[in-house]
Image (cartoon, rainbow over all chains, first blue to last red; front, top):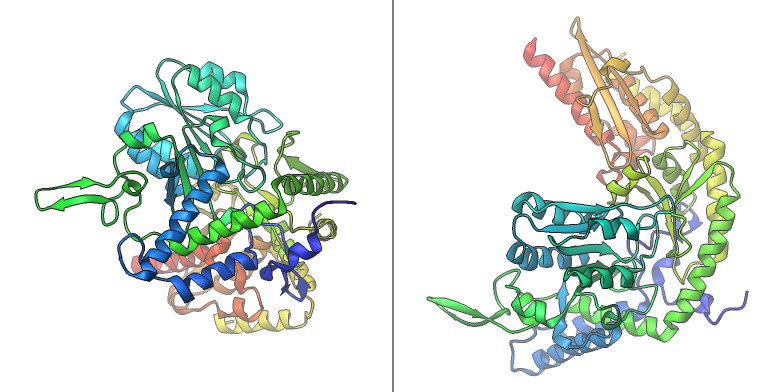
Length: 408
Length: 139
């Protein structure tokens, strides 16, 4: 199995992978929930606290300038990483949920009126579903929902039918966290733009697998989290087109985001600071910067190729197990598999798989609408990334056989 | 048998297993003995909803004793529910209110009562105590 990706060496970079759970070497297959962090990222955060820590953007002293420089450098690197046109189109947030909520508040509540319509898909994570549902109820903005087919793919023709002159926003996922389907978002974005519909993409499950180019996609907003791409928790990105961000009011109010404050009134800072009230999570952003360098070093092509091989191998092995059913069978899939074993409840399966030293996710994956569509209460999800191995997949298969033995 | 005696008995039963797999197999067997809730009581009102598994719980009060029946869609959850029902059923409201569930910890199943499991069992214990409190107030 030749590969230009040296898994053995890569694994050495991830301290958390080298531990025993219940006396067995840990197999970490819950990467879609959060990935482990490479030593380089952890060390970057330690370096920040040991050598650079101070509040950014507000001191003339040496440390403040140094930290501010590192922070703003990270913004430039992230801009280049996703190929945004302007550095100030990169807004630092807490994560995808925070990014979506920023757009819901500063765009949705400000510019959408009663009678306008918003389109989402049934395959959204709750974080790109509930904010729009709440907005819909609050402002009487009907929420239209793109269904999925039996493979778990968004049905483009159904989306076309939902589009009309009242549609103002399309908010869809780039990759389903539950089914793994990768959405051909370019097609959706172009169609939406023909109708002057603003498009927000939830990229939480996409950015770590494939090189992103927001200018090529031409999306209006793109949201993602650092912690799902080997970076610390608590740091995420909202990319937005300048012309939209410029006209949107601030999301939160406080320090950092102001220009002049008098007792009579306040004027606000310019982009991107207008949307970054309060002290930011500096170490998370510096860690994200480092994580991106780490990924670029391995190479996204290498990552994509290896993860595809893991997915194909796991799919083949799992499908050989009698009674095992995979939800989400699109040909264009991220390296995650949601499955059910006969009639065995995911909680029972997950408990035993855990006891075998394997971390998988069970439950509804914060995506209840799509599970309702498939009429199941939950699934078991194994999500694999480039530091996982084929041997680990074999161990998952063994664990599933044990589950079958105990519950069938 | 008092709550404490029943709990001790369960601890003894589980102490014979060294292997986690045997313990879980026993738990699965115990789930089969759970006094099942009558289908007519398997209502939305009696459902304790968790994100991972669901538990239904019903209680009746007769001669100063509470009798519980329950069910769950997951087998392991059902097994633990069976243990809780065995310990708390046929007891007075007062003894249920004052009882602890340390035996679950002692037999090595504590993780199932962790809030992150979200399997309805934590809420099941709370609900059993609420029933006890309600029956006591009514009595």
